[in-house]
Length: 420
Image 1 (tube, rainbow, N blue to C red):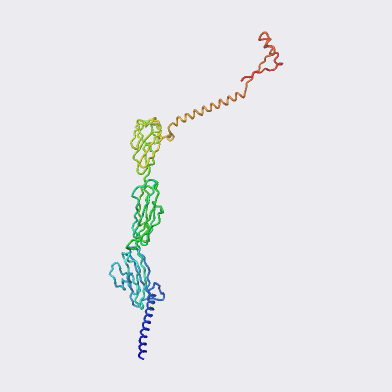
Image 2: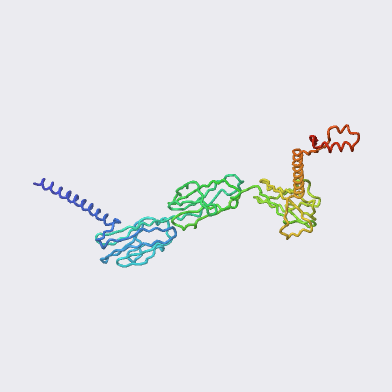
């Protein structure tokens, strides 16, 4: 009997322990279901929260509500399960955390100057039986830094290639980078994302390769950051690009109608990068006039005359390349009214060309007339009729011959002479 009692006494504690373990498991299951984010519409004591997103340095508001309260207090806890506020009582000494409202059914607090370390899940609890909880996820956005563009250290020669690099650090989640030429978006290479050591942020890099032309000189190349923590255009860096190219040249006369006896100049204007510094003046049809003086980009005439007419050339050099252009100078007579709209500037030698053309036309017309007249005379031959009677050679004198001819004319054949 004593052995049986001993076995029974050992059995009851084992059963108790098994029962306690089952009860603990059931309690944990119930607690887990109550702490879940699922809201039971038929449970008026279940807290209700919502997730929040805030950028670093901003302010986040955490709100917890219940429909009914049995005089239990609401509580907010941080990601480390440290109590922030229990009802209207501050539990954690952090001046960034302030109470906005505390009632039996609502608890609202704010966290200012939010940092990346504030990211995570916050818990609202109400101490009923059992304790009910709800979680709110606070997502803290890492604000990207202003982009930095490198690769502009030197000017690029026309036709060359340049690779520019844009970098922005500190974003969470990773930012996106966009390239622009003035206001037009251009495509760069895909972004390269790298995580930053010791903090949950990222550094983003993008490259852009350009083949430049002279039209790209002084164009603004921009890199802009796209991120939910900032407004569009808030983080943008612009840099002008410098392109080296040979000059394009033009000649600007002092007057459109230069007249004899006046002072006059031609100016050589070169557009290049860098600006041209060396100018050479030439005259196409000979030496420069004795009275013409070269002054860098200017060709001065002290007193114009007809002998200054000609084609003048200017060549500009900026060290990258050379450009040249020509200009035809036609000096007007001193009495020409510059305001007369019928007076026009014409190229050199136009008077002689017109005269020669008129003479050529006249000679051609005369030759044509002579040819036509000759052909006409060849086709139409003249005729002479002679009234010589047969035997007139036997007449003793002229009078007798004439009489014989008149008398015998009707019976004799006409004798014709042809001439050309």
